[in-house]
Length: 265
Image (cartoon, rainbow, N blue to C red; front, side, top):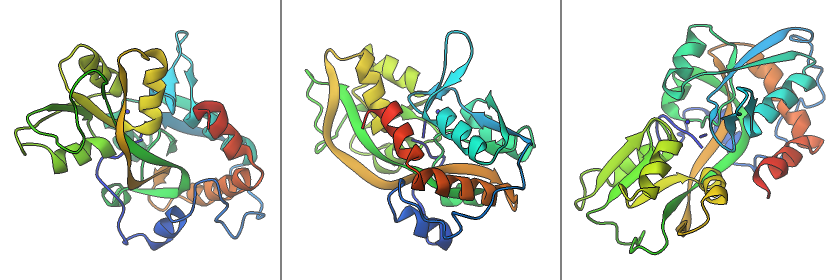
């Protein structure tokens, strides 16, 4: 869709409060006002967008309903705020424009905090921290320490996609192929049209669950300080309500329970 997931790469010091939050594990409470009442949105409907194509963070079921970690987190936050969640699917490339156009009130879609995004939207504290991995044919010769003359796949407008472009596009004979979603990137890997896919670890592990034969994660995880949070419009007080609710579901163990239920760790 990260869905790890960045339109642009890594965070900067430009947002000190967010950076401070990101320096702690995502399952630790960081809000000093955790016990403050959340009343501004009580009884109201909060319209939330997700991608619906980034398992296990968010995906669309056969009946058209939405499931995944993001959906569970969104519902837990709304319950904590005593508000009603209305969750809708939105293509990844249009998800921030849709927020700015007031099609919905927030984005909960495996979206990572980046300096470029912070120029357009406000983020809550993180609710998950990602790492990246290489996914490849385990019977092939792919070596993450010697990447030359290869076709590398990823999803556009994501952290891994930006990482591929920054580090491999046009270098050492490599070609970077970016797709609208990870499903298409994995499809080309499986069919042999690419040599490896760089993806968020949880996305790669989810795909391997259904494709265990002949494919696997190769090399060490890449920690690029990828922290996922809820996005709202600039200056929207809804951010404070989300932060209070997020702090509470961290401290009461609900966030950890949802991670375990969706990621198995």
